[in-house]
Image (cartoon, rainbow, N blue to C red; front, side, top):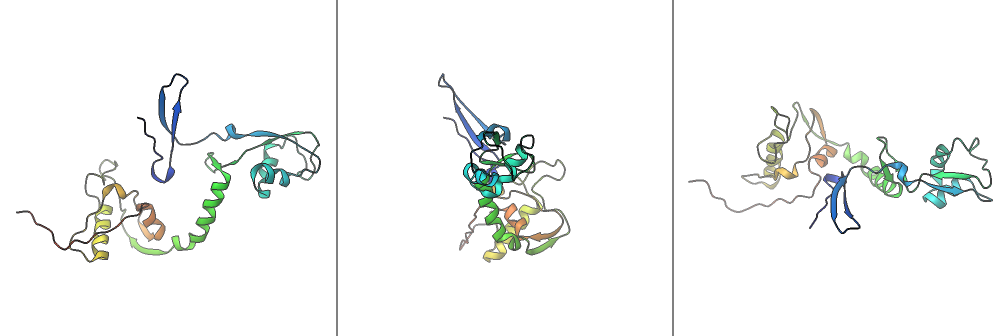
Length: 208
């Protein structure tokens, strides 16, 4: 049995390949080459870049992507030559770091982000030191198997909010550090991107 996973916040895509001989291979894919999703389109009577963009890419607003991909063929974006072959980027957009993105999914995510941008900027606290999940001496991730100042802060926060005597935090759920300065709501979501639940017990044992 082969298993694939995406990693934190879909950092990678799990890819499973079934070869003609029946063998299986699994890998994590970090990016899709944008060039692999292009296609061609033949200009028809009545076409415009915005109409082609709506038909082929799902949005009138993507006409500029088609224009930029065909600068060698289009001198004026308002004038198209009937029968000419245009390169259409496909249902993907390209991110700032050169990775291919599904346009509709990217716009959907941005729409949600826009609703919460101001809330994410709200300052919840301040730290004069870096709150880390790593071993200060080696720089390697340590919060899963040892104590770090951010792990301590998270456990103390759970204890304080729940009114408990003891706070315990799963080190695997503490995903990122916080730089010195103001701590925003977005910082806390970056540290804890997964939904967590606190439990408050009525009793506990001490070591003999």
